[in-house]
Length: 240
Figure 1 (cartoon, one colour):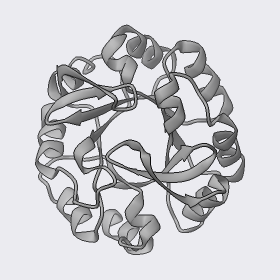
Figure 2 (cartoon, rainbow, N blue to C red):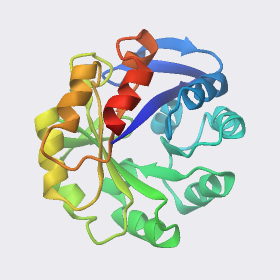
Figure 3 (cartoon, rainbow, N blue to C red):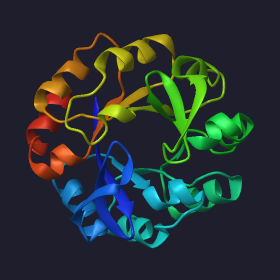
């Protein structure tokens, strides 16, 4: 399993939210590129970047911070938030993003996901963010009647590189991930699944590793910044 350290970008800073609430943000580093370099130097093999402002605006907002991270690091990075058309997808791939994450458009314009996955093989992931099994869009501000597993299965033949599954109620709350739902999703589809939301301890990482499903990896943010998860120990655990 791969550990993806999260760098959530708001107003140019590296922050963490609680359950996706922009009003409940904590700034952990005002230099996202320095934070990214620290994760790389600690041995991380991937970075998980989110343009929080972009997720609400529907277009890139923290582009300068993302480009600074790309310039400061050598490891691949995946990026989500406000990526909702082919021009933006192509722009980020051209600038060096290894994988773009399509969330809102996966619900509203699934044909775009298919087109992008075909145009950029291995570089398109689907972000599925859910409350109580139902998908939420537009920076988690709008809930739909679409079920997580139904949405994931609809992309089985599209060439999607990964599904990033986030349980919104767990995100940033340090209450542990929804292991059962994550494992069920990973067992229901052939697309690699990355767990996100609430990964806050070594025990959480062990539970995901041993959940009985072939998870690609896990994303963690606040716990790494707070020191609740020791990065070196976490990398060793998941590589083992």
